[in-house]
Image (cartoon, rainbow, N blue to C red; front, top):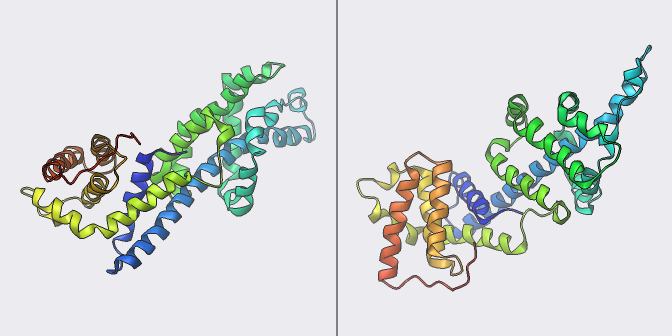
Length: 311
């Protein structure tokens, strides 16, 4: 469901979080780090499922709106004929019927994350849109339009809604850190919703990669720093941005201990992460340091990569 870059970010965040509480004993540090990583992955999955819950709640609110308006003391003709087509949207109901989604609902607090006032506001905004008016005007249903109106709720009413984004940032734990990943997950959801497993964010292969990258970064900390510190020309290690040092450690670990990941892929990935999560100069800095370390390692014949391209 998510890429290796997303995993690298999660491992980086885990190391950053665990630094203040990391025991000196590496075995205990690894155990603590893996616990934090699992918590972060679980939170990401919770946020993703919460977004799906919001979208479904907005669609289903049409029926609540119809009941409320028809029960008015003096309902208008418009009140009596509220269109509830979207409540039966085939695309969203296929997701709601997903066994793993149902299981996730039972084992999580997703319902508590969904604010009914915001559901109502989003539904009212939806009703004013030309997209929605066109959707309910069509007598028949087709797969393309069913998906399109659900995607519209996501892109226009959630992503591009500054007020709602502020609400999510203030009220939903982890949203600001994870929203870029959620965007990717939602993009995958619209591409192939039938294969989504709402109980597992990662395949077993990617989960093994995440755990291995984290444990290796902790276990090989001393050796990695021996390689990194001589390359910090004009910079003391304690003056370099902490995230940059973490990314360098992860990069060195991949260069040395992950034979199926090409060196070019490793360096390019950590450059991009540094640009996004650290300082404006961090991409260039991480590139320069990792490139120097790679050249030394290749010179000493310490790099061994397989032909298989795994990214």
